[in-house]
Figure 1 (tube, rainbow, N blue to C red):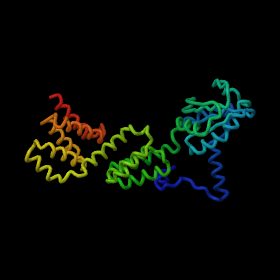
Figure 2 (figure 1 turned 120 degrees about the vertical axis):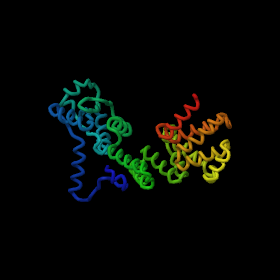
Figure 3 (figure 1 turned 90 degrees about the horizontal axis):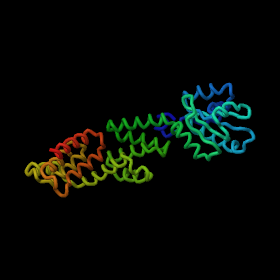
Figure 4 (figure 1 turned 135 degrees about the horizontal axis):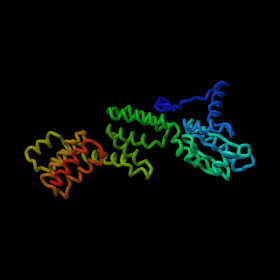
Length: 318
């Protein structure tokens, strides 16, 4: 699947009515699946596996489970859109390779990468498990193109072009609905454009095992901060209060939240650090706790996080 196809929410191929189109489709499918012999094994498997993973299906005509496996594994390989190839070897006609690999039971499927066996399974597995096996060996179908589309969307986010990035993330999800990075990216765009309810709904829809992902945690922290800053008043008024009384910690605290909402991160950190410097125990260490929440929302490698941690460390150990 090409990047443009993902963005347009269309497959990168079409099914025509002409005999020529049908023949091309059949030819493409045949190219992914072939039989091999002892003489052609090195070319069909070892050499080819240096370009992409090759699955070798060892089978025999008398083997009932082999007949069950064949249509299923061929279907999954074709659905994998060229990320792997399937090579079939009849061990009755060509027993040498299976013997060298120590295969004693069939069907047996061995995955070759870079000229060597790396994984395998035995028996007629169901379709879902075969898909998992192929993804483990080769990655998701269309992986390179998908990563390129994600990289394009991420670059748009870095440029501040959140609307266009959201379109790319949404198109990726239309093509590959389980793409976690696209879910996260779209939620990030929603937060950046003020569509907080949509971002919250998107995060809530993620599976439980993703709830502790650092990206999810950071976005939830950002949403919490936006909720906090919803009714903070005007920046000028808060700054005037701080200038009139540097120990007006309530004004400093609200100013920090407001500055963070405006993405003035280091200034926001400074306000909380000034509270901590002047009164560490104010409202049960409220300033430091809020600063830690900022760090969580900004991410561990953000420049403002690194800056804030350095200043906090110097205050703690001074």
